[in-house]
Amino acid sequence: MAELIDFIIVSVVLVAIGIYGLVVKRNAIRMLISIEIIANAANLSLVAFSRNLPNAQGQIFALFSIAIAAAEVAVGLGLVVVAYRLYKEIDVAEFRSMRG
Amino acid sequence: MVDLVFIGVAALTVGAAIVALETRELIYGAIALAISMLGVAGFFLLLDAPFVAMFQIAVYVGAVAVLIIFTVMLVRTQALFSTKEDRKRKGAGMALMLIIMASLGALLLASGMNGQFGNFNDSEAIDFREIGEQMLTYYAPTLIIMGLTLAGAVIAALALARREVTEISGEEQQNGRAD
Image 1 (cartoon, each protein chain N blue to C red):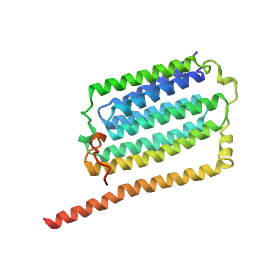
Image 2 (cartoon, rainbow over the protein chains, first blue to last red):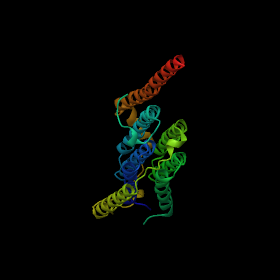
Image 3 (tube, helix red, strand yellow):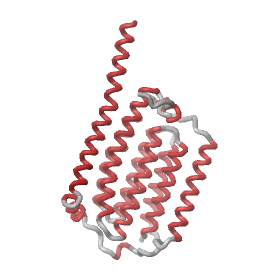
Image 4 (tube, rainbow over the protein chains, first blue to last red):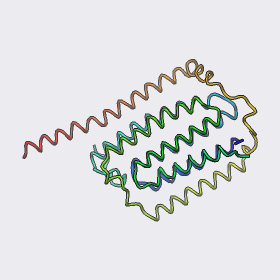
């Protein structure tokens, strides 16, 4: 059976992949995908610790975190659509000014 | 000892996360992200948290992935192919990823966490009825604030998208008059 450390190591691998995506990719939607991967890794470690302690608070916090991540994605994708309308481009290097 | 189901779910999750970032077409990336999130939901099931797994599938696979797919459809296809990727930058990013993995992994394996908890199947799983009870009693104010935050985020996203529509249509009207 898998132990706590195995879940935490998978979580670390996911965080590293997400950071790689944030550093390398210049596409706004891909950066959002990277942020989602990092958020998922955080939720995974929260639930893993919650199961091992055992304590329900970790799961409750993971539930709140999932809901807030959904809100964040809604606003982030709204910004991507607005930026696309302004610049005809979703490459973040091309967003030269923050002027509306 | 790690069992086969865990290895399968871990390979699915990590592989789909890599595919989500590395496919050329963004729409396949969004689908791979959905598969990766399903893998994380599988981890939640392995951790005896069926309620969180269900929430994960409903919110991430059902809402977030579909939202990303719709945004990809709204954005012009040419903008989706990022050809400006620097090879040097990619190499540096990969090195950073491997350094983070190796250092944090070594730190975790060397820490007291390794083997301290043992097999968690010995302890009793958390009942989701306890989660529901705590959410409606101790965490009730947090739940309300979270609902307000979600409503605010949705209204903000609508406002962001809407204002630009009116401005662009105004410009188009002016252009039409000039012609």
